[in-house]
Image 1 (cartoon, rainbow, N blue to C red):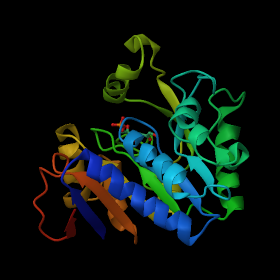
Image 2: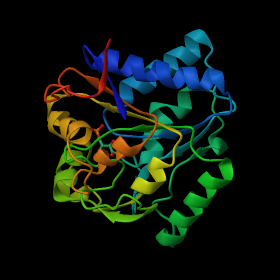
Image 3: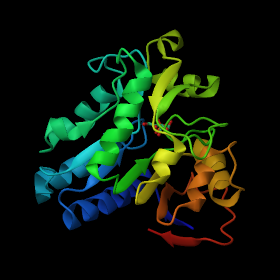
Length: 252
Ligand code: F6R
């Protein structure tokens, strides 16, 4: 069952999600985190940086695995997800860079790179807590509608909608890569705990379908209903289409 936390606004959503991650880091200093990029987690990462600087939140033993990376972008490219993670989080906390893992978008053999990534996650002992954002079309990582529930880390094609959504980060839509390497739905569902964050009304439809609709490949986030420990932390706007019938809701 998905637990839903509805925050009054996007700042509180970010704080609440950061608190959950900070608690897990304190409880298990060598915790394995699954991390996401995109616009939504930026304020949450800022809050984690603040907790590190002001409250001594310690990342020295933490390991991380990111969800996805654009195919063909170098780690130094300012729109690569490796660059995003370094500049939005890793460069500002005491995490060891060798403990941070992002798929290599320039790997000579992308299929091999995906296999290697799966093996690394397994070798590390599996992900303790996975952060997710959600696409307006219900995607998680780059598992677009149509992605099987048991899919693994692989090369995927981005839908036109995702390319359009992500064009805001690039100079021109023609620069948005059309393919990515992405953890699969099956990979994500193996995390011991999952936290999905979402704000803005543009996510309201995807949020209501994933929580209150049927589990379907048309809305990959709906597969999260089958996870035993999954929390959605959403702001009021993203929650605005929920009927709030049969789930556990907490307001903050
Ligand atoms: C990012 C990722 C994507 C985003 C989603 C929402 O690593 O896997 O699934 O979480 O596209 O993106 P934003 O937060 O920019 O709305």
